[in-house]
Every structure is written in C-alpha cells, then in structure tokens.
Image (cartoon, rainbow, N blue to C red; front, side):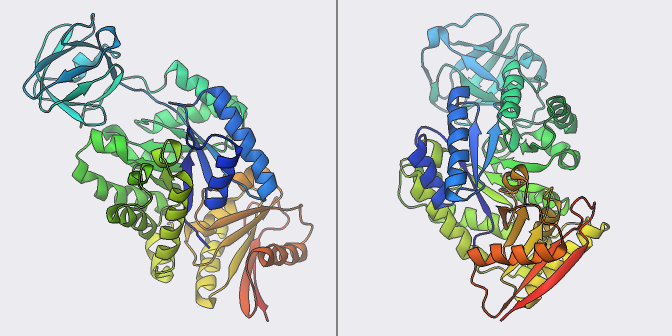
Length: 468
C-alpha cells in the first residue's frame, strides 16, 4: 500500500463530481484549492462534492486551501501584449504606462533594488538588469526576447522585498478557509516565523486552531529563517517554482534536501511541489527525469508530493495520478526501511509517546508486520509513528472526523472513523477488524498502540498480535 501521499490541485480539468471521483479512485489523498484561480463558489462546490464522495467511497480526502500571497506584477499600456528583444531598454514605473513603460503594483520596489540587480518576469522567462534609476522609474536592459503581458509576474532574485505579507484578499481567503473548515492552509510567500504566528493568531480568533498551517518556502527570506518557520508551522511545502526564480536554479536541489531533512527531524509535514510530472499536462507518459524527480522525493522521505497544472488544467489528470501512484509504490517497495528510519526519524524522542512510537516502528520493521493500528483522538500518536517511517501502513482509528481528514497528508497513515472505544480490549479487537477490511492478515503480526483513557496526554500501551 502506498505511503507517500498525493496532493492534487483542482481546476477546470477536474471540476465536476465524476472528475473528482476519478481523482479519488486513482489515488488523490488531498485536494488543493488554489485561491489565485478559484472563486469562493467554485471552492465551496469542490469541497462539498469531495466530502460527499468521502462518505460514498469511505475515504477521508483532506482539503488544502492555498493563499495567493503577495505578488509583484506589471501592467501594460491599455492591457496590451508588448514584445521585447535582447538589448531593448524598458522602464518600470510608479507613474503611467507607456509604449516601453510598465506600471509596478509595488511603489517601493525602487527602494529595494539597485543598479546591477537582476529582475525576472513570467516565472523567469524574461530577464532584465537594472541599469539606472530615477525617483519614479527603474530603467532596465532586456537580456532575452519574450512578451510582456498585462499582469505578468515579477521577481527580484536574491533580494529581500519589503512588501506586506498579507493582502486584503489573502485575509478574506483565510476567513473563507476557516468558514468551510478546510483541513490545511498553505501560506504563500512566507518570509519569517512572525508571518506564521500572525496567521495562527487569526485562526485562533476564528476558533479554528485545528486547521494545520503549511508554510510555503519560496523566497530568500524564508530560507534565512527556515528553522524558526519550521518550529511554528504544522508543515512545510517546498514550492520549487517560485523558489527557483528567487534563487539560483542550481541551488534548489540541495535546498530541497536540506528543507526535507530539517522538517522531518522536527516531526513536521513535508511536501514537495511544482512540475513533478508537468509534461503529462499534454502527454500520456512522463519524461524519465520527471519519474526520477518523484522517486527522489520518495527516497528523501517526504510526506506528500503535489500535482499542480497536471490535474488543474492538464489533458490527462486521472492518468497522471495513476502514474504518480505507480512510481511511488515501486520506489517504496525498494527502500531499506531500517536505514530509512535511522536517517529520517525525528529528534523529539524525550516524550513517552515519541519513545513508544519509535519502538512501534522498530518492532513493525523487525517483525515484518502487516500493519500498525494507532487509536488516536487527536492524531498525535499516529503522527509520531509516521515520523519514524515504518515499512507497513498505519491504520488510524479515530472517532473524530477532523482528525481523520487532518491525517490525510501524513506519511503511511490510513485514517478510519470508528466509535469511541471504552477499553484497551475494544481498541485491539476493533483495530484488528479494521485492518482485516484492508489487508489480508494470515500468518502475520499486527502492532496495536494508543492511549486509554482516550484523554490521556501520552500514548501508554503497545501490543503485538500474532495472527495465524
């Protein structure tokens, strides 16, 4: 059974009940709604449909709402496209647009850049160099040909831009995510830990502390404050698209490895995103490089991998999820899980729950257990076991629907909604029943763990069941 989770971005290619059902049956664990593109009505329909399908298909697919975040962009004269050639001079201005003048939506950019700085447009497709400045204008030389379209995005690699983290639209989007009880909130263009703490305070004011905050690492400022951002976040998403524009492309692979390792050592969710199978937007088969990219994320031990345009606007969304599912399973079947646990396991082993979780994972690997059953009200026990990356799946029994959906993103977990159990015997008996619905258990072992009473602050029992 696949353990690395799949996040699918929902868009025009996957709107509608049958398309969403197809994604879920193909392997989607979490549905991502990108507020840069979706309207509130579209988002509500997607969420309602997925939650109805969860009941129909006996699944617990989670909902991730992704904020737009602060974005620098240029507006052209009368909204027209403007072709440029290498060697052309253009002006970025705070005044009015003209034939070679483009209006920036951030007036203080002129204070943040200087002569010689690089500016990129359209996700790095057009490169400019600052050659002069006036009080209102930044004069740039174009380094390669392209077309400047109205609203084209602008980045300044390796420069910290002092634009406000939250726009009015972002605040409204966060309030919307809270109102529809989204399971995860992905924050775009986080710069430091204080940005995350501000959002956490906002969620508390909405009485929605259970929504998990996923901080997207996609700029130089976030890299510089990475450890603190990880501490205050529930998870990290490596948004390689914007990150690869903000810093040198050749730095992205080693930073990905660094971010993954730091997240896992802190027992935080870790997600890799952007262009994982992008050629499948228009082709039925991925490139070899894309297959290796997905496999490498599995080797690194991430909780989840993300499909963006592939499922939002691609021609083959279902086939893309099926392909990603096969790549992941094949790679997981060829991992050394004992080494995997030692390399990837978290450092937080001082708590009783962490110690038991580590022993559960060790025992499961040594006994070649078919499954681990974790009874958990809050999901904490299951998350701690997941942190140690056991070879077998973790069946999580919980009476809490929010907990079940909140575990949809964690490595190896299969959440199952059950009644509240009244004894450890009930936990064991019902846990085994749930496992048998999913996995044949002849001549195998199952490890059951949890806490009783259920409000106990620590996991306090572990039992090994031999099935003949």
